[in-house]
Length: 173
Image 1 (cartoon, one colour):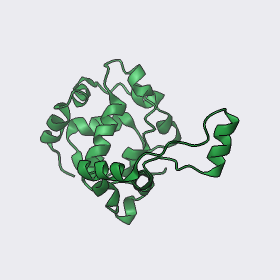
Image 2: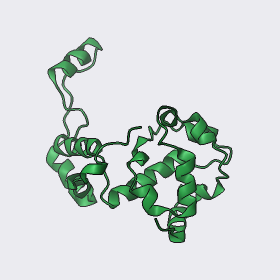
Image 3: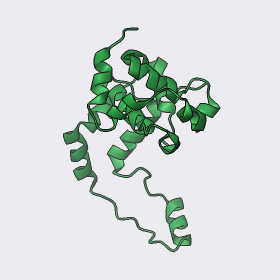
Image 4: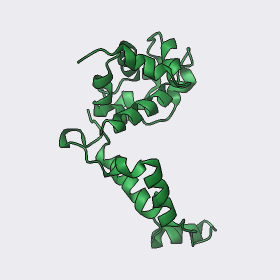
C-alpha cells in the first residue's frame, strides 16, 4: 500500500472534494450511517481518513466503497459540513475508472443502456399504473438516441468492462 499526497490534492480540486479537508474525524458520519450499522467493514470515517492520508489504492480497489446507501444522513449531521456521501460518489467514479464496478451495478447500467429505462415496462407495471389512475402506456424514449448518448459520453465503456471475480459483488460482512 502506497501513500499518495497527490490523491488528496486531486480530491480537493473539486468543490465537493475540498470539503474532505475540513474533517476532524469525529465519527458522526459513521454513527448515523445505516450501512455502518449492518456491517463492520463499511466505515465512512475510515474511508475519509484513508483519503486524507492518501491511501488511493486501498480505497479505490476495495469493494466496501459500494456499500454506501447514499441516504445522505452523513451530510445532515456533519459538524464540519463535509460532503461525505458526495465524496463517496467521487471515489466510486474513480474506482470505476480503474475498472472496479460491481456486477450488480454493471448489469443495471447495461439494462439502462439497452432499454433507455431503469425498469422496462411489463404487464404487471401496466396493471399497477392502471390501479393508480396513471396512463398504462409509458412513452418510451428513443433507445437508439439514448445509446448514442451513452457511447458519446463513454458510459458504454464502463458497463462493458468485466470486473475481476474477487471484486464482483458489493462487499458483505
